[in-house]
Length: 116
Image (cartoon, rainbow, N blue to C red; front, side, top):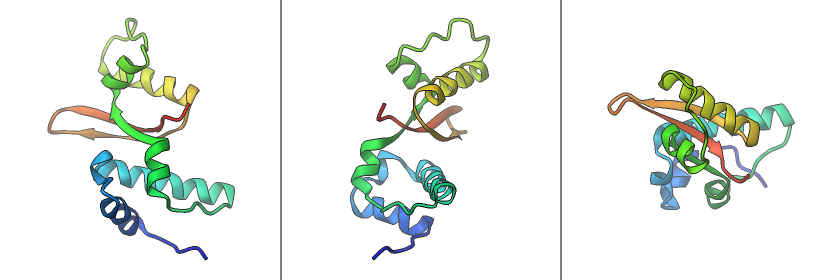
């Protein structure tokens, strides 16, 4: 038996499991929408397994991702080009769910599958 969940239920499942802070609201909204689109395109239902999703997906700043994966950004002229280069690197090597900006700190975060 499967149960349908909306974005609120999805985010609350992460809260209940003590995993909300691993992503935060914006990242969980992006992950939820990504998984819904995946279900629709494949015609396969996904089981909501918070721990499995935490093992497969993550969110980080583009700067941290570039550093962690030693992505060469030396030919990028500005941050916009750097973000694009990091996103392209991830798209070539894994699945990118989406991005969001933290306007307070002027930082762009990328939600992606890091099981590669």
